[in-house]
Image 1 (cartoon, one colour):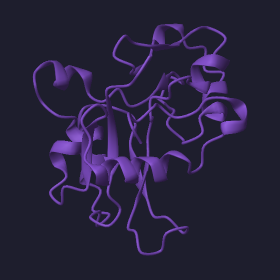
Image 2 (cartoon, helix red, strand yellow; image 1 turned 90 degrees about the horizontal axis):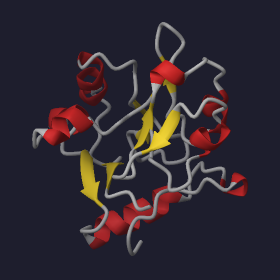
Image 3 (cartoon, helix red, strand yellow; image 1 turned 45 degrees about the horizontal axis):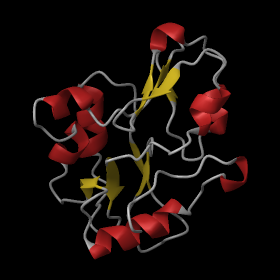
Image 4 (cartoon, helix red, strand yellow; image 1 turned 135 degrees about the horizontal axis):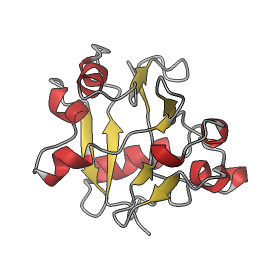
Length: 171
């Protein structure tokens, strides 16, 4: 299964304003997206912490109740009614993409599928005035996007556990 779209943050454009986080929260999502500064890249303003919709998601593999499912479009979706709050997915996720609501149920970025069905980009992308956050079509990327995704793909992943990032076509 191949993910068709992925969020991409250009840290050189990000000014850390937090509008993307606010837009996500305005939809009632519990902090599914976070932008944090990166000590590893002092020239950059931010690093994206959200679900990267892995090809073989570790979060789904460790879930004892099959709460996390990979949809036909490659998006990893939670089924909160199945979640028992064990937080194994939180431990397994290599990028900090899992969050929990006030009831202790798993949640994560779903690329604003409801907005997408209506032809709109995710709320975080629409709110980014600097254009630092983009929804990248993995089948139709610019060379710059492919290079940036390839560089980011290796960072902070628990490859030894076998999860691996989603395949960014040609990158």
